[in-house]
Image (tube, rainbow over all chains, first blue to last red; front, side, top):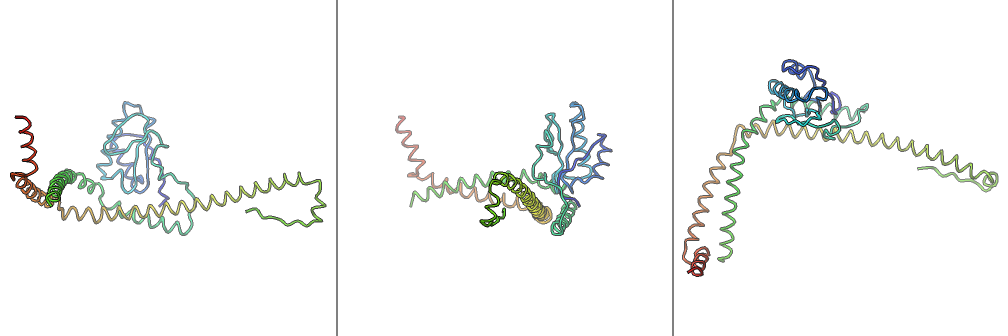
Length: 164
Length: 122
C-alpha cells in the first residue's frame, strides 16, 4: 500500500458502465482520491455527478469511508452523497503530505494501516451507513421526548424546592 | 550550533588587516552551515510528521473498525430506541400528572397567579 495521500482518478468517459469499471479497478476506498471535472461543459456536470453516484451505489462503495473520494469542480454543484470542492487546494489538508521513502518503522506502521483499512473496507460500510440514516428519525423523536421530559422534571424539581 | 575556534594571540597578530575579509568568509561558512542544519532538521521534522500522520491514520481506522464492526452491529441486532422511547413516554405521563395534581391544589402557584389576574381585571 502507498502512503494515504491524494491521488487523482482521471475519468475519460462518463457512462455508468465505464464509471463502474474504472471505480472497480481504482483504489477508491483504500486511498484518498478525487476526480476533476474541469474538462466537462458545465451543463453536463450534474449528469456526470449523478452517474458517479449511481456507479458508487451499484458497487456499494462509500465515498467517505475508509478513505474519502471527492469531486473537484469550479461550477457550483451540489451532491447528496459526494463532497464537491472548487479546486484541489480546497480539499481537506489532512491528506496533503510529502511523499518520501519510508524507513522500517514507518513501513511497519503503513502495513498496519493497510491491514485495518482492508478490514474496514470489508465491513459493507455502504449498508451500515443506511442503518444509521434509517435510525435517525427514531433518534430524533427520542431526543424530542427526552427534552420534553427533562423540562417537566425541571419544573417539578423547582416547585418541590420552593415548597421546602 | 556553529563551533567557536580559540585563536592564540600570535595568530591574532598575524591576522591583523585581514579581519574584514575573514568576517566575510566566516559569514559565508556560517550561512552554509545554517542551511545544512535547516535541511537536516526539516528532514527529521518531515519524518516525524509522516510517522505521526500514519499513527493518527491507524487510530482513526481502528475507531472506524470498532464503530462499524461492533457498535453498528450491536445497534442493528439489539436496537433499544423504541423501548427507551416507550419508557420516556411513561415517565413523562407520570411527571405530567404529578405536576397537574400539584397545580390543581387551591393554593398552588398557578391558581394564585390566576386569582390575582382575575382580581385585577374585575
